[in-house]
Length: 315
Image (cartoon, rainbow, N blue to C red; front, side, top):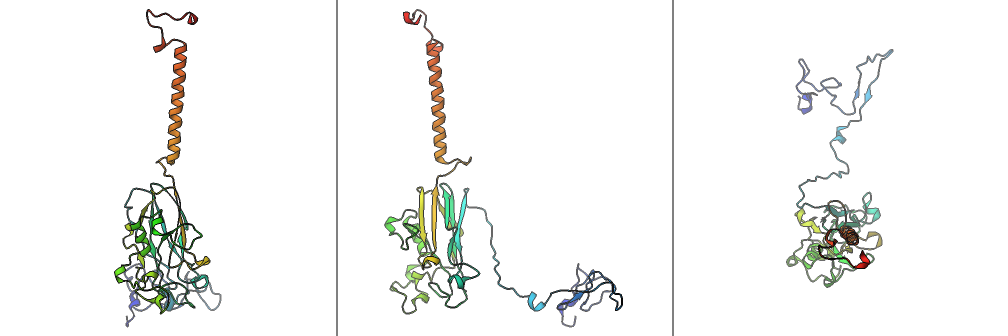
């Protein structure tokens, strides 16, 4: 109506017979007031100048604001059937670029959880993600391209270390797995292999794969590639991100603790072995006791055979 598409908006469907085809300024069973910050007579009470029976309630509706989104932190995710029939633990990132002040109200980079216990037979689903549009707050402190979040995972010897293990000393990852999570999808053929320091604005160079600048903002691209079996030797394993492990209050480190696997009844493998041994021992002891008793009483297979006499001391 008159160029305003809201003029025919009737609550509950088609307009009632005889309804006006103009914008409404009252709350009725069929219409809502279509203007900013309206006042409504919710109970249809008489609003007389003298002895009023009610008053209007003001609605804080401003179409200059209701059509906007402030600090949208919503995400879309899809739930799919698990690719394996086993327990899966999620290991991912939290936080954003910047120090504790610049990152607020978020937090600095960290793994979530920072300590993960996984029993043998289960799996870890590891996924790394980041933004390409971090606002420059002050210096927006961080490593690599100035507006980006990127992370990788390399194995180290202990949580207090700040250097990765040499590849010959890896305990958790195989060589192929270690390359997969350290390089996070970057192709060496497209990287500048001559970069050795952060001079000449190398931090922001797209070809600086050492700062993960060519890594995708979500890795791995196929979520199923992030499944890691926990069938590893028992013990604790430690990891860090080479890009974000700046110093103590921004140390992006993780610990994975491999524990004994459990049966469907919730018993560990060690407990099952111990119980089995105890059952065998107990049954064996009972069998030995029965045999001694039957021999002493000369029963069963220990009874004297016909024509065979007992010794005098047994009579």
